[in-house]
Image (tube, rainbow over all chains, first blue to last red; front, side, top):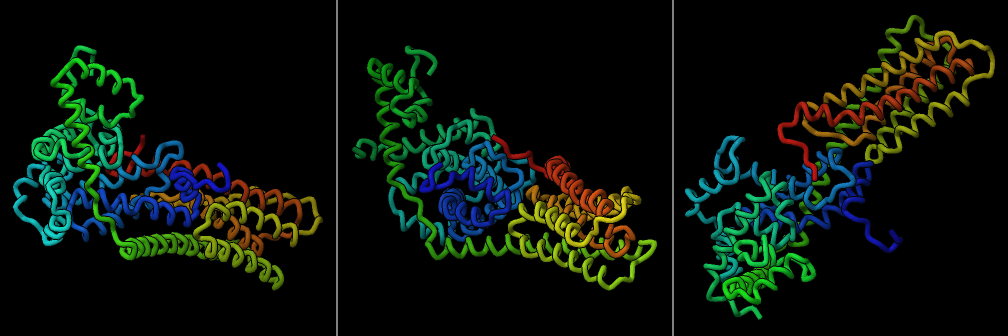
Length: 192
Length: 261
């Protein structure tokens, strides 16, 4: 690494493990927006996303000693974020600890008619068909698309992050893409 | 895709995200040149991904992000302070226990001045370096050596009591470590290895300070090096071993599996 080169996330995390608190600040600056985006995609509420962003970074801090230096940082931090997400979903729908994403989706559908003011604001702000089509997907599919399309993670990584198999992660994302294609078909062909 | 003659089906959603040089993508596009349904599907998948690229997720404002960062850093600092305070309390307890349980306490004011000086130096070092604990372990060892080099006289061959003095320091080192492991288990939160090493050496150096006013041989060069400094050195090693085992302690208490890739 030359002097001009920015340290990698893995290097920063290793430095934070050694007690370098500045490294944590840099990690926050690099990843804060992306983790916020992950939660906003999931919950569609800015305040909730902001709170969960903070919870995630507290967990990064608390779990810093468990981070293995030779492993990629990105899937690690998203795994933590995904656990924060599932905890919040369970709390929200008052579900027991053992339920998975599929159960959460069922509860989400039961309560899907409740649209918060925040959510409405986001919808108005992004009043286009793509955003709405994304918003209508079940949460677990939305998050699979977010990690695959927007974060560029592989399905093997997504599966591990969400605590599911690679096949299950693929299934969720493929269903989501198929649904999006159906909803956005009139717009297809207008992208070039 | 399993073979050149098979349709792409759902795999298209992943294939179009692969790099243009990826063999799977190349094979898929070759297949699509002779397969109308797959060609249409691939085109639609490409267009859908292009549509999704148009969607921006709203960013947190710079101010809100800064506030979130400040809130997290404040909580992190509070935790670091609570861990440091816990270790410092352990230091005071260890020092007091050594004085209360010693067979005799020396009454030489100079020894007390030196002993208390070492005690406060170790405590201050820990308190001020709470965010850089990686240096505390080695600094404590250096502190112990410098202290003996400055205070002990090269007189007397005696290494008597070497074992009991060393044991006192090791027990003094183990005490804050046990408290720290209790902290880890109770809060389901791991701490960096440097925290354990720092806590162990803090206990050992505070133990050395206690021994300075209770051990009649503390000024004897050979004894001080063979037991007092050696005790701190072994405590550093014990701290390292203890620190490397904390993940196993955590496994017993943390409900979720360890995160690994």
